[in-house]
Image (cartoon, rainbow over all chains, first blue to last red; front, top):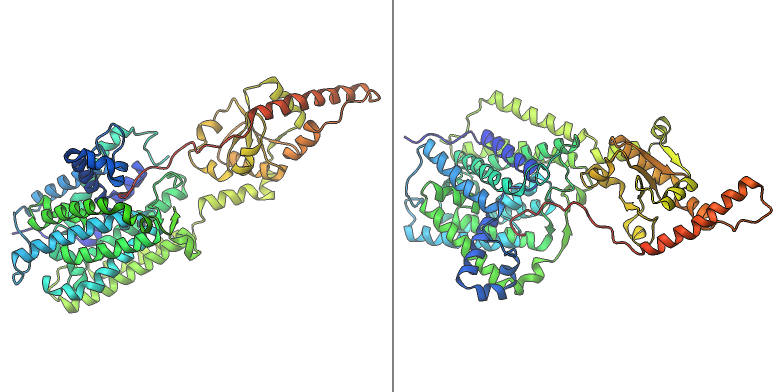
Length: 169
Length: 397
């Protein structure tokens, strides 16, 4: 028997307090895609340093004499992984599963997850952050760009939801 | 006071705090149910509005907290990272992410949560995310133009709307409460077995009323910056709290003397200051005194801070503000820089017919004119520097 999820308003309030504490302590918001970017940058530098040195994007993300993984967001994302795992342990939700509706084939879900992830990764670079770093953290500091990105994410998702309904319902 | 990094908390400790804050972030996200893709996309099919509730509540909470801390001078928003606004890129990126959301069922943060509790689709989403960022990096030169178009810097969402930050907060709270009510109504019809009504209805109404009152308070709160600046500019306040004046002669004497306990503070625009100013002067834009930038300079009580501008009145405003902020040993140059130029720099040559006392003054001024003019020439053009940098943050920087 799995324990129920937290009351969404309480969860939202707690999440807001975590974000507020982050801004007050560190002067910056929470994020996720930035950590993935650091992973990509360090991988490219490790695998093909010659190529990385020639590519402006990977160059700029690699501070002199320091690993791209020595970044605040990387530590924060490791924390997210740990915190979610901890929550899963407490609420007894740890299972290896591929979550999808019964009528959807496994490979379709796998392809959808990869394509969705790729689009999110790409979009997060244009948006200078994802749902966490741009939309939520931007909202906390009243950033106009953050609100624009948030409206665009949810607007676009609602606009295309109908065409992908077979994936979910 | 805030942000605590880097003055109170070192950058190394900050990384550890990042880990701890991340643990709290991940824990709450998973507890809210954000590790389940089907729960997340329920938002787009009207079956589950958890995302909207959590997201809006979190945003309103954090934003209200930021506004309140800022109002009481506990959080310096001039230093806090504000996500920069690039219009085209923000919209394009958001539109791409929206498709990714519906297709993949996650966003980056939630996919990490899903992966953490063993969701294979979450792990695959993370891999896809890495691939998407790599693709962006490879295509970077080709898309640089749209990536950097429509730049507005640290634009606040309230600015183009022409309202105060507090008024925007009220607006957002009204929208959020409206959305909570509407989605509960929709959910009841689309998915009657939904588990999402944990609050008794009465409690929900009280909570809604409470946050609306909070919104009204935020909207009514005068912005700290505006209220302090207007108090400092109020003639009645200035009369009641007079600032000490220092004459051009006295200042000239201290400058020639090389007195280090006198600090001329030029409050004119940076561009004017860059061209010419008094020897040894620092350039402080009055609003920046509200933050941390000049705290260490202004709080050295043994130094006399002599505020000046072209005219006396602008300097009085700045000095009054400094006094309101609690800085001591503050004075204003009487007659402003115009007066100083007339009395000292353009002083007439002493003529022998003058009475003894005036002759002494005239001789002093003539000597001061030569010496100080030389010092000003020596100073040359000075570029003012921003002393405290903004926090570097965000995911795309």
